[in-house]
Image 1 (cartoon, rainbow, N blue to C red):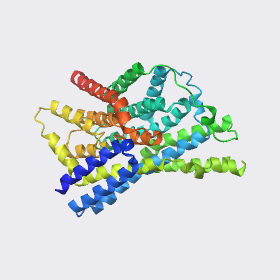
Image 2 (image 1 turned 180 degrees about the horizontal axis):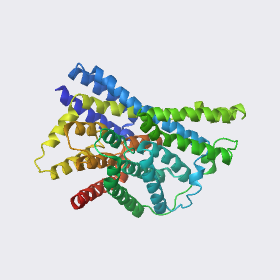
Image 3 (image 1 turned 180 degrees about the vertical axis):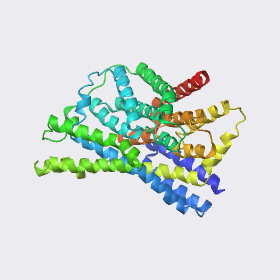
Image 4 (image 1 turned 30 degrees about the horizontal axis):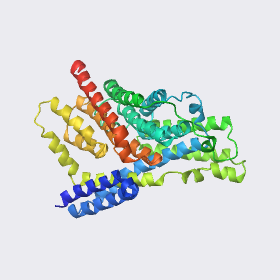
Length: 426
């Protein structure tokens, strides 16, 4: 009975998040309550679930500290006007052209950094390029799609590809070679669709929106901070490779170095100016409600994972009466379609526990693609989507109407591309 009640509670909570604006209830509050209720029910269903709660909280905390570190570094660069280096070089204001520029920058940047960090950086850039909120929402939706697509073909681009890569499911060279084309297709299709629907030019933010302080940041300071910030972000995958420690430690280490350097830079400024530019002040600008939303939704999904709901789902999928490889193509496509509803991390973890295919088997590669890009179909289906939703206050229903269907078409087109590619070349 409790097993079923947990599913019902999750569905109700999910619906309240989706209907945030009509109900007038903040999604962060709903997510936190949902996470609490799910674990209360979970402990009643599984009395020994307490140690799982602590374990999952540690995993979620890694993501939250990573997110906080990345957001703070981006804010440091932003407040020092470091993004002028990029925005000053993007001269086009035509919406259709700008979609391609933003989409391609995000796609390739995500493969080098990761989809979450890239999304945060690109939203900061969009705020410098596009003044109208609704126009910016369209581009922000594209950022989610491009970041997830770019992360899917890189071994360090998405948490699920990192999981599979570290577990020895594929080599870095192989995942890049076999998933880059499907990933490109999955983002090109939405860009084409959005390009056909968006006409005219974007308006740049006014001077008052660009700057709220009266003192000037020199070009040298902006450039210096930009490269320090980008260096701190690029340092994270290097740190993980060298130390084999979690990425959030590299992110926090990079933040600490920026904190120290900027502190020395502004020692001679007037006290009010130095306070404004200090990391202490920047930390107060971080979107805490988004972080709490992340906490609540991930803990709710972890409760389902702990109590066996996701294992039951995987076992049900495995009973599909089709022959190999068609069966596993279908299973992987379904996992991708479920990933925007149920977090892709526990779904991939469940799949890793259920199947024992050898390294570089097509299932693992296709799973990396599906779990990475499928989450774009709903805005709360990926870490990138949750971060962008919080930063831009994008409405769930608006995203479903405007972005979900191009995302779905792109996902299915990319999946078909992978299947055809596999059947032709093996």
